[in-house]
Length: 623
View (spheres, rainbow, N blue to C red):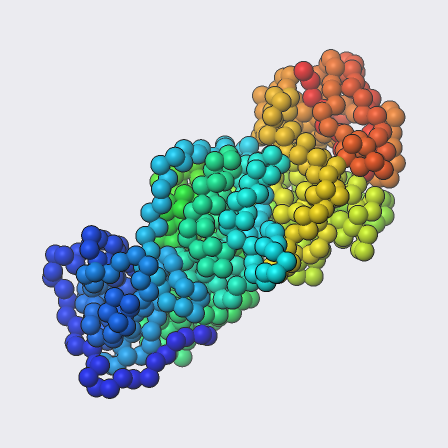
């Protein structure tokens, strides 16, 4: 583990013995850097240090000029008159009366970089003209984004993309129709390129992406364009690289190798290193609770997505091994979610647990973890398998029907559904078009079946999500060093239009498809021989509300295919994925408006014929 150690100085540099403070001026509230007119206070948790000093540009990096005083509970506090914004500093940790190491402030909201100094920074931004209100959860459409690879900065620049560069593309995202961006983690991490799941400084914004001001401008721009921002946070492990929290105050033993912030050896182990935070310590839980509130309040993010929740609630990362459950991890999740519900209940918390566990999204009062939603692994795996499988006869329509109707806790907002995410298109897996036909991601089969999957994402109950570039048939697997190929936006303009149309229908832009954001689904037609399913979506029933979706998973078209309908009258086609406007080699099979006759079918009161193309989806509703 990386740590910055210094050689013991001469005896004259020893820190005076600390005393418990009774000075009223030193009762300022808060952790980390506490700003006041004419100076700054510093408070840090280091229960095993024999002394702490703050050293920085304000005292010529002296190790003794500004000692902190013990507050008697593992906390140390001191004030530096004249310290101001922009100055660099660090804590000097004393062990047995001698300097042991220099550490960045665990609460620092700005750092030079992952191996640099902390910076005095006030994350109080000008939000005076920000009056954004996030859409209701059942109307959200999420766009998952990795900031550093969203575009290429320039031919001569070997650097990741920045917040400001992405901000320039905000009009494109608005016009696409999405109303929420979920950005992968942006806490300071080792090196400039990363997925972000290796946070070294949890409160600081990655300097290579543009730092605190860049994130502030990004969020404010998103809000101006009507787009919410959901931030990915990592509480299942830290680092492990460039991690000043490791043995932070100099203490460790054979059972607690990492010191005060981490579990002992067995419970510390994660798939990413032995750096699982010790949720059993109230101070560590508070640190993580403070972090969640920091992003929600200081940066006005509209929600948080929690990475690998199963590795917070179970030290083996198993959803089915109660013997290794971490009760304190579950408690942490409940505490954070209670904080959010009590303070800003309209903001969403999303769990990446991937175990299909209802308790993750149950209210804390019932014993649940309290998340607003969770990524639904059963949906992505089942739908991807159905559209990637080469042989039509091997597609399981009953499995598809099952995941379409799989709603956690009786609420569609309790799951996020998708066919591509950063995990599903990396680590040995590829983008869906490439999985369908490796080496021919632009083939007819790849375009037809990948858009079939996308149509199900936008019509099934759940919060739909797409991954960056999916909307213009990006085929390369995800790498943090490989920017999106924006030339494909022109090459596959029709596919991009298909996504736009689906998103607009999902959000009921034309007041014709309200049922797609409704709570109800009935998969009333399952033809496992011809590989066709149809399902009914609704909120309150009636014209503009009842929606029928027909999906053909086989390479065969139909002029007249009979399905059941819930009401008589004319049903109009709002979307036909076989339209040649999406691609000039699509079949353009007529998906005609159809009149329902009163003749029961599929358990419905009426029936009608529809036309549907190969590997295509129809969406119908009534005026």
